[in-house]
Image 1 (cartoon, helix red, strand yellow):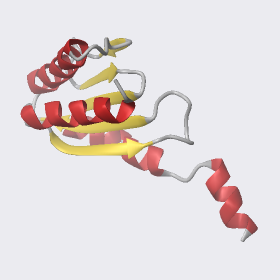
Image 2 (image 1 turned 180 degrees about the vertical axis):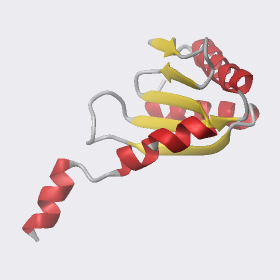
Image 3 (image 1 turned 60 degrees about the horizontal axis):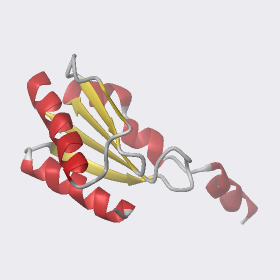
Image 4 (image 1 turned 60 degrees about the vertical axis):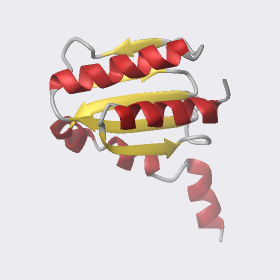
Length: 118
C-alpha cells in the first residue's frame, strides 16, 4: 500500500471513530522516522484506546501491520506506528501540554539555512 493510501485509510478511520481535531503533518524532510504524523484527540481514555486499536486493526486488515503500538493501557496518549504514517491519539489536556503540531511544524535546518541565505 502506498503511503498516501495508508494516510487516507487513517484519516477515514479517525473520522469513523469520531476523533476530534485531526491534524496531518507532512514531516518528510524533517525526519527519517516517517512521512506523515497524524495527531488527533479523543474525548476520554476509553475513546483514545478505541481509536488507536481501530486504526491498528483496519491497517492490518488492509495489509499494513503496525510496527508497534504504545499507550493502549493508560489511554491518555496512544501511538500507532505504521512506518510511513505515525498516529498519535491523545486526550486534549495531553495534546495541549505537548504541542506536537508546533514541534513538527517548525522549519527544518535546511529551510532555516535557505531563508538565511536570502
